[in-house]
Length: 213
Image (cartoon, rainbow, N blue to C red):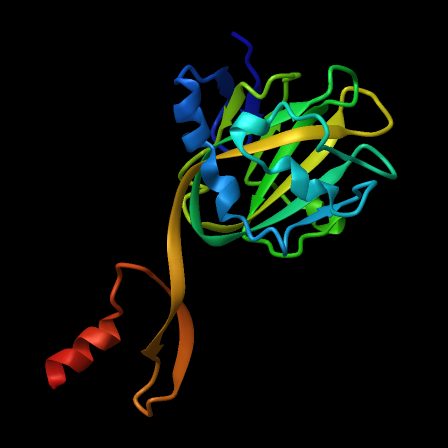
């Protein structure tokens, strides 16, 4: 079994081949359906819009007609907005069988429109990657850090020595919670501000209003 490692704030974690039946794996990596693809950005992609194509069904991960390749150097930066809140549990990065395969991945949560200038800050988690040609290696995230994610940035900072980096598939495993616009009164004068309220939750202010009727 192949392994990779993650670093940053809590030791070293290994990536392992998950052994569920294929149909279960396909369901497990369904978070691509919860990405707002119209707003997804991939910085330093050589072909505009190609970064969106690597977020696809697990069953289609070996379709090598869809891939993203970096342009000016080996770095890629994905800005991934979700349509709700996500608890991210694992990630797969599949590349080419050569030195263009990513060798390091850095994750940042909830920094919309992140740029390469922002990658100087400390990532929420960093992974040293092994070559994965079949989309079978999962890198487990620290769930305590990735339990309330509405935007994920993936920084591919290094490869194995090539001038450019190529990625065929990125798989995201976790849980998704729908959110909607709700409201609550923030002051006695009834001037209200909008906040995100998760489905299934009722704000305290609404409860109080029902009791007062």
